[in-house]
Image (tube, rainbow, N blue to C red):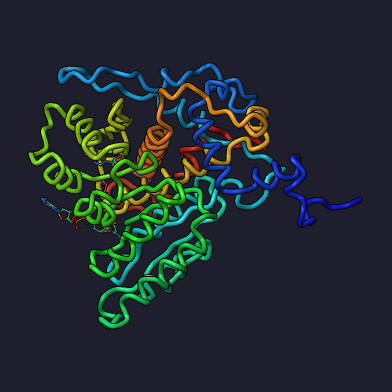
Length: 398
Ligand SMILES: NC(=O)C1=CN([C@@H]2O[C@H](COP(=O)(O)OP(=O)(O)OC[C@H]3O[C@@H](n4cnc5c(N)ncnc54)[C@H](O)[C@@H]3O)[C@@H](O)[C@H]2O)[C@@H](O)CC1
Ligand SMILES: Nc1ncnc2c1ncn2[C@@H]1O[C@H](COP(=O)(O)OP(=O)(O)OP(=O)(O)O)[C@@H](O)[C@H]1O
Ligand SMILES: [Mg+2]
């Protein structure tokens, strides 16, 4: 029998064209959006424990009056909804391919934490694009990561070389970009001006390719000084800590952080930047896309060791990735392929669901790690419990 998948004209056959498209990251990204938005998704046979939940039961949509409380998200239901079942028919990469853009002379831990946490919750492949100095160190932490030593800092590039080096870096990353389901920009990136210029080009490229982009750490330093990099990008998520948030508020809203009206201010910030989702990390993680606001305040750990935010950005990525890959062969997806119809229920932003799930899993893992290690808890201990915190909510089965 003829093997159509190897035939150069296979795409002419609608059945095979569908199969080829189904294997592509672009398709999986689209599926993620569909799955998170579609009311039909709740009727899918997988993840039956969440099958009766509609989006509005995950996040109660409050009117943004200053006195309104911020509603707690039903974060466990969100995790159940977006975590794909383990399917024996799938091949490597279908549970997601992600990339971290970060890692320089000073910081090698942050990109490692972000990249490994994505693998630990189920992504298949995790790449790191970092400077040459950082690459060998990051590789030595884990053989699981695919490390690209391609970024350069000013000290290693002469003025005359800058343009050609910058374009070589973009070409290198662009070769890979279409394969990624999501990228995270910033953990351990550093603040070298030449390096940040190159990363700005990478962000613009990712945006053109419709790749969901999480911005954390020094990526937030970059965008705070260059808001056009994220303005109007509905696939961008910012995950600022208390200081990063303060700088963002000062720059964008031209005022100080107002803890009394935290949700209102966060909403205003999202609206002013336009289109994006922000998770303000702190005692509670408050999440908004400018239309709705919710929070996750499940108790985590009293330890504030560096690196927890990096896990969160990596975990968020993984959750997006997991969602993207979900039920590629499910009937509603085939229906989408055949009819090319988008769902009309757009009440819940899938970016917000990813933030909610990431926040809960980190907090649960931090809680387990603290129970075991008390004051000596460090980020590596928390990563060790990522699997358990997901397993407790979504058992992998056999
Ligand atoms: N092991 C690692 O490699 C780690 C690397 N990290 C990376 O380190 C880089 C810098 O991140 P940081 O979170 O340290 O950011 P900052 O360099 O902005 O902050 C450093 C510290 O300065 C203080 N600070 C900053 N702004 C302040 C303000 N307005 N008022 C008072 N105190 C202030 C805070 O104690 C803060 O933790 C990022 O790329 C990040 O990803 C961190 O994630 C920690 C772990
Ligand atoms: N005061 C707090 N009480 C409880 N949990 C907190 C508190 N502050 C932060 N967290 C938790 O720690 C996670 C990481 O937030 P944090 O503010 O440490 O990020 P970060 O400074 O970016 O971390 P990193 O060191 O990785 O850069 C948050 O998602 C939140 O769950
Ligand atoms: Mg951070």
